[in-house]
Image 1 (tube, one colour):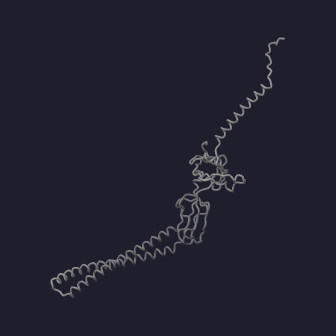
Image 2 (cartoon, rainbow, N blue to C red; image 1 turned 120 degrees about the vertical axis):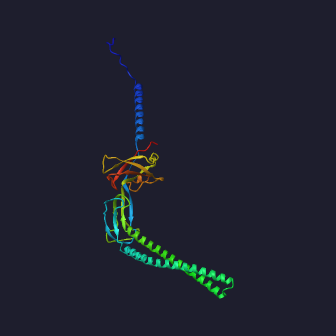
Image 3 (spheres, one colour; image 1 turned 90 degrees about the vertical axis):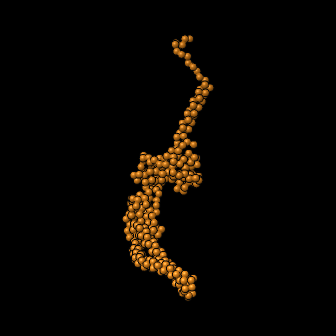
Length: 317
């Protein structure tokens, strides 16, 4: 019977259909594996933490009562700015006393210098006189008693000269001592003003006006907010991909969609258990490595304690 111009119908066996299905399945699996591998290569280590800043404790250097505080917690301060002052009345009295001592020593030094000069002249005269007496004694022109008297006078002049010189030197040493006392008083008066060594923000204030400050006692804490840092933890599987100076991206919860660039500045040399702030017991049992990332904060947007996520632009293993 004719086909009427239609192409013949191909009949596939069950075996042919199964073979085709297996080939399609294998192709799909290969495609999924390729996509999965490519995705893993493009993944970067991600960690979470809270932002911190480097804080400096400013302590009192002298003992005294706080007579003025110029800033409060949260205030921005400049480098060299005066933050508080400690009373200096006793130090001023010590300085005045040292000044009076220096004026007294100036007169004593003048007298001692004249005495030393006179002793030197007397010694020179005694030497000349004894030289003449000795020459006469050697020629038999003077008695032994006269020779011994000249010898005794010379020794007395030498002793007086040494004493005068020692007295002058002692007064000079005393003057240096009093000058050092005055310098110390000046230094302590200067130290009574507590100044910030950096530009930053006052994070804590430990003393108020009227309280007593003691050497080494903290008065303020100032944080450098121009550069923040965050410490995040990565599993040992990821730490091998992270290197110092790797670039990083920080996303703070307070600024959705905004990316803050950062740099890996420190990698812990040893593993530790996940910190206790991690919620699950299973996660806390993992060994992790701490990584510190520094982030520039020129406009002061980032604040201490802000939660944030960090993505490390790490290299593939």
